[in-house]
Image: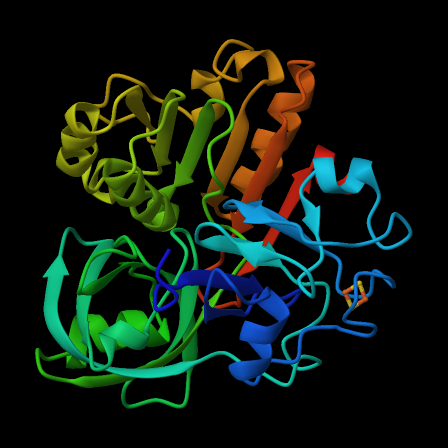
Length: 353
Ligand code: FES
């Protein structure tokens, strides 16, 4: 194995801020982080104290040498690892048990140029950015950035609707009256405008699929799921993936053609959509919960990813518990147009450890 080759390690901090470091197969994740001036929690650096213990959510690695007091066999079996000892065998995603500030790091900042402003309908606009230093921008599919709205002192959070593998970055925006980004996009925005943003941020990202996945989108909550699907099209999953997309009115429906194209491009992918408005021409009227039964959740053997407004998150949680099913993992992101994103999860296996 060539020592010039290296893997990419995503360090996801408790505040959602994510930094990426290059790590050679012959160096530990702690060494690679230190070189990148990121102070992940460390004490003994010898596999003895357990201070650095983190959860590896994706990738393969050699755990190195350590004693049981630092990491038990059960912990290792459920994905916990010691960055001071571990060396990568592939790209990795690690959840680091500290804030980014405690690790003396922060979200990366980027600048970009607006290249496309596409008005899908009265309620939805998509804009595309050409990022200046694209090679320095890494993110996990599902994550968001905080974008400084041009001409204002406001910042708004938007999930990438494009996958990490694409050069240009795209975002879906719901137009709301009086909204800062809405005002900019519908009135002032021009191709060529300069835009700054920080990130990536968020724990709502696609994990390696270990079982069937159910993706649930409410309105422009479709964006992070489109990013995940683009990634799945590059790395075909071995488990079925179903997406249910719910909107309020017909004009909120976007990217049905994109979803249709993924039915062919992603093995095992299927989707359906519904519209709450009784006047809709959609086949399914109502909410995504009307399209979900215990079978949709594979009787619990499914990972659920939900991005939508708070009321939808609550409705889906209530519906799932009324079905008497508890999914293996439930990742969700709540959004409201003018507030920071709130991401969370119920990961049975992680919480039990
Ligand atoms: Fe002590 Fe890693 S720092 S086990």
